[in-house]
Image (cartoon, rainbow, N blue to C red; front, side, top):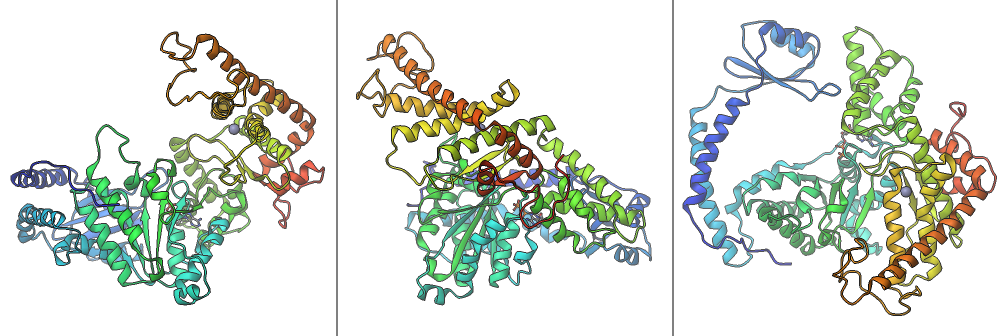
Length: 622
Ligand code: ADP
Ligand code: ZN
């Protein structure tokens, strides 16, 4: 993959300069405008003594500070005019406020700011020259990119695996990376396949960054990190230079980890919008170049995080790039308890058992939310002058977090949860019933995931199959229909939750008739639906080209016939299993997650405890 040339056809040297001068001017005005709200001295002192202040910067005659983040509220800045107060420093220290000082504004700085556009202009023209003259790795010219990348390197990472809780599967998958980073030579000799690009996939706040850091910490290697969103607002060429620089520096410090947060901001599929985003494309191309160029034997491991893998440019996911995916999911109850324990380790609790209640009451929350709850509870305790944090504080902190969460994404009502449980179990039971041996279901979960999916059933992927028989396709349709039909069986009424399943099932049936020659209407003649989009969906007269209305109708009829036949079959199978379905749903509602084995055990009529194996039962099955 080659670096793309900038598309600008005519080089107008004065344009960037004018734009930059305007930019600097606007920025100055903007910062003035954005000055955080002023505090009175009394309000400031009060905030300090209540422990609400996180940090302050003391300049000549002013104090700029930040308040701590509270549930539902972001960290807030403020500013106040400084009053001569000999107690101030002592007080700040007593309340654990981070204090730093800054010299009064330097007139040279402002001059430098105004000279910046000129510098950037010079640099841009150099960059242009260079990109015209082949892809040499120019060194000293990229002082900006260079110094920035250096800022992102961290050594002596203290985070360990023990600090990341509730993501055991992800940890297991990453152990190999640690082994490799610790002794790359030895690993190579033993012939281990060396990982290169690892994509951590999961909702925000589940601990992806923390996990990547912990890998560096466990292996004792430096951690370079950069966020995809940092590239988006940059000038053309800067992002690419920065990527190049980052890799250059990382390679010099190998073994190490490069972590790119928010990969989706940078790696969105190209050419999706009407306007191409040149800077992002260049940066992305550079990243691809680096990914292909670097030799994993050097001991550099690339990790990235995203919560939207589906929008990533497919080029990023190809073999030899980010080809290993590690799912970092929302924690289940056990996982939440583990996260709470990690964060409560530094907080004295009245009764550690309280954490179990909190874990049960925080369905759908991620590690970051839970860390916040503990922090909030500790603050509440301190404000109330308590020695230890009690249940009252914990519960109040949860309430605040829930309120914040409800604003962000909806929380399911108990009735909806029940429906989701039956729906997912419908899929899972069908998958188990129709699998030809083997464990077809890895787990069933009603922990909400993402915006669209209310629950999910993780099926063991039928490896990329080249050939599927007619009955295998029919089984797939049956599994897809299982969700909806289980809802119908139990609630005697359908919901909107299944439309995606139904669409997929219809697509398979249509493929069988139109593409794979498995229907009667066309026989072995195929129709390429791709050539005539909306061919069947619209039912429009005209524009049908080679196909008659009558044939289209027959195809529709056959598609419908295939789906209907499977629906009948699924109704039968589910009917036979209604008792198991109800029993399993009860367990799933208590446990939120059931493994494939547990489900299989239920099907065999064995009992499955209300709490995960090995753990004592914590509450009665309600
Ligand atoms: P992400 O990168 O997935 O958005 P982060 O790693 O930035 O999430 O998590 C933010 C903070 O939330 C962490 O610094 C940590 O304090 C807390 N946290 C998140 N997940 C976990 C977890 N699994 N175990 C412990 N703490 C967690
Ligand atoms: Zn479904």
